[in-house]
Image (cartoon, rainbow, N blue to C red; front, side):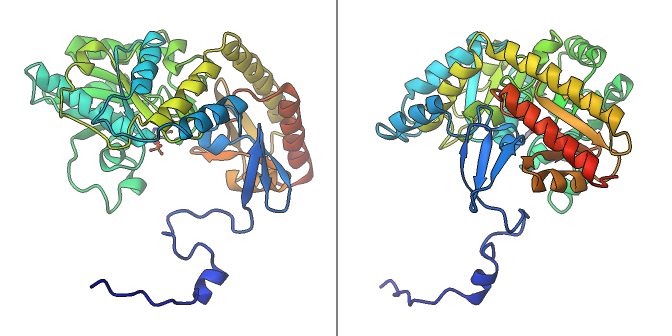
Amino acid sequence: MIPQATYTAPSTEIESNPRAALWPNYKPPTELVFTHGVGSELFSEDGTAYLDFLSGIAVTSFGHAHPHLVKALNEQATKLWHTSNVFRIPAAERLAQRLVESSFADGVYFANSGTEAVEAGLKSLRAYQAANNHPERYRIIGFEASFHGRTMASLAAAGNPAHMKNFVHGDYGFDQAKWGDIASVKNCISESTAGIIIEPVQGEGGIRPASQEFLKSLRELCDEHDLLLMFDEVQCGVGRSGTLFAHEHYAIEPDVMAIAKGLGGGFPVGACLANEAVSSSMQFGSHGSTFGGNPLAMAVADAVLDLVLEPSLLKDVNSKASFLVKELEALTIKYPQSISSVHGLGLMLGVKCVGENTKLLLELREHGLLVGKSGDNMIRLLPPLNVSQAELERALTLIETVLQNTEVT
Ligand SMILES: *Cc1c(COP(=O)(O)O)cnc(C)c1O
């Protein structure tokens, strides 16, 4: 017999704190709730329009409710949601083929998030070494101030002590090198090293593009020692940097690459791309996901790719980015007491604050502009890739208004 539930009235705690039943691991502003979005704008419950230059952290790359994406999702929703990878998913086969044709890769694994795509990639580095008679090569070199997501191995790869505390104990098989310091990478290499993971443009840790020389040296080091080079392009990939993948700026190819954020335009999806040697070492049964690559995610990601691969898109991203950088740099000269420099690639931009970045972020939000924060005291701008010139100008006006009127130092 299953016991009957008795009705309990909602507790007063829920009434006074609508988030009481959620884990307290997030802390959104209490009074602000968005009901819908159109293009680059989000609308709150009271009808206020906000210009969304955060894009759900580089996710809604074509803004909100883009007709092409809505159509793809709606059409798929009436047909088939899920079968699991027990059966063929033709949309996944097709999307993988498109990604392969547009990149260095020969094989793709679909996941549901960035950190899962990273995990798959980390496993593939070890799988490759094991498949090539080097099971002893399992250690992976990561970089300080990196971010690879919140699963255990991703935490260990990034090595951020604040994120790892209480969660990652002992040696997870990762070593930590200094950003931009090839000697420190060399110091980490041992008989047990399998590969290196790096964000070509660091996102969370401060908007920091790697230098040409550094990435080139990493590639050479990997080739020399038969190590694999993995790029985490979860944030900087899929058009965000002004090229389809950020590493194209450097003309350096990885062996493995994780992507996610912009890939689904807001639908959760991630992917790990790899060259033939690595792909083929992920044999039957080596990895898997119940949801990964499901028909809904594939339909939307395929539609996102339609938009990213439109011939003028990347050119437009670059010209908008140059305009935005030029104008922001002018503001650093006009308001040096508040902002000091502009960083990034394409429409993944960081503005370094003189005072506390949180203060500037809150002021901007008060004025109707949503931005993010990043390490190194940055304000992070991640507007939709299809943002209009008028919206860029509106954002710049809002930023200048805030810099003029308030003490953000
Ligand atoms: C956001 C992010 C991740 C993690 O993605 P989730 O979808 O949150 O798991 C990993 N790497 C980078 C570079 C990211 O920016």
